[in-house]
Image (cartoon, rainbow, N blue to C red; front, side, top):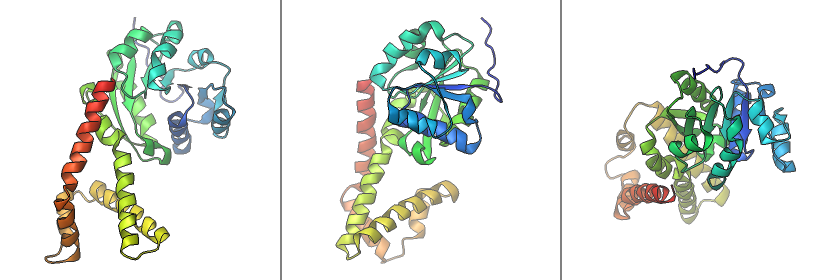
Length: 273
């Protein structure tokens, strides 16, 4: 069967599962102008979830079946343990003229394609900063997904942050780094703030300085075009305050601990998937 190209300027987007990630994607698409809310639809029985999408102007339908029928692009954003049952139930409606997308962590393309009876699938791994438009997302194309399909999804997920394309074999490592990584940074921000309090700062000021410092440092890495090691050297004067602090971090195995955290999370991702 010939693949019908999805019309990029008129396609309709449906979410199966109306949780926080779906809300982030829909909200980013609307705010960025990638899609008007009239071309987005979902279904949910929970009043709070319906209210969240209603506030965006999204079309609320009575069932998942209706969402699939009325959508060119269908995003499965349900919990990983529910994906199989949901996809199997919708299988008769998942025709090859629809582009299917999954954001369920740990669920592989080969399984998604088998359950759907449709290889036109794209797997995307976003992370929770999608909620503030700063997601780090990675996508992998299934067997029948076209380059144009990939471009369409890259534009959609580009509305909630940055997106890269990679082979699916890297997804467990991606989970360990960008999927779990925000939690590592939250711990680091909390620890920096505690350090500021220990050094005499008021708690509110210390937390504000810690979070802005992490944000600024990350922006320098992405925008300055320098290796993080060089940026570190730029603020490390001989015999100064920064090298004294770095010396303590090195004695505590800071870099090795972070590396081990990523590897441990990636290993656990492989076990769960």
